[in-house]
Amino acid sequence: MPGRLRLALFGPPGAGKGTQAQLLTDRYDLAHVSSGDIFRHNLRQGTPLGLRAKKYMDRGELVPDEVVIDIMLSKVMSIHADDGFILDGFPRNTRQAEELEAALTARARNIDKVLHIDVCEEELARRLGGRFVCRDCQAPFTHQGDGPPPACQRCQGDLYQRDDDRPEAVQRRIGVYRDETMPVLAFYRDRGLLADIPGKDSVDKVFKRIVETL
Ligand code: AP5
Ligand code: MG
Image 1 (cartoon, helix red, strand yellow):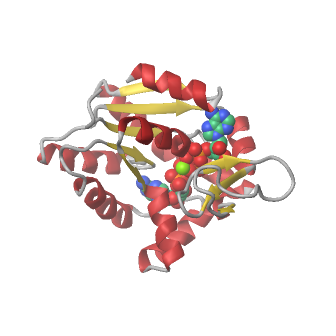
Image 2 (spheres, rainbow, N blue to C red; image 1 turned 60 degrees about the vertical axis):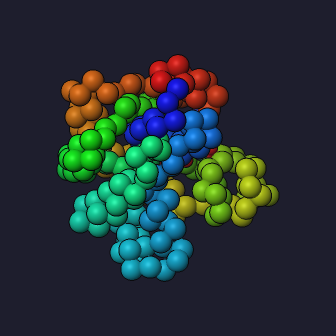
């Protein structure tokens, strides 16, 4: 398996993009580039970018392309040509996909595979309702009992619940995914890059499917 695998992960909110990205990162030594994590990090630092993104994120809407595209392209292009990466949450609409393709092509780079993790809406709502995220390493965990789970199982960091995991914001995010992000799947299908991965089974089973696809 080449170390310079270049992947993009697609799937609705709660499909398991972050979960699978971390497993893939560890397995194939890839850089994990998550647009949502970048915005949340900026918000915690109180940067103008974080404050601007917050109002869109809290409503479950996309942050405007003018804000997203420059930041994400500079992140992706700063990765050394010999290193692989996994994109999680970007591109998220057709314009972002076109601009990413143009920027990669200009540097004789490309995406090797686009993994579409497919999960039904009832399961998404169940997962996000019980999701806690590590403040330090961003790893997500599901916890259905009372009270927060004690600490991150990966790095022992503090866990918190995301503001956009309220039921109204989750519904809005699922709608935005359907209207704005699903058309990007056709963009990659046309290029022969798309792999559909059924995502409702256990984390390990879904990971095994992805590895087999790669
Ligand atoms: P972002 O952070 O990208 O969120 P999202 O796409 O809504 O996806 P999530 O992170 O909620 O879910 P996930 O698929 O990563 O699932 P996870 O692995 O955590 O974006 C947030 C916001 O930022 C957007 O709404 C937008 O405002 C803005 N934004 C980001 N990118 C943008 C862009 N490019 N353009 C414009 N705006 C942008 O898993 C979920 C839960 O399920 C966890 O608890 C996990 O433990 C559990 N789980 C995972 N897999 C399984 C499994 N197989 N079985 C059981 N449980 C599982
Ligand atoms: Mg995520």
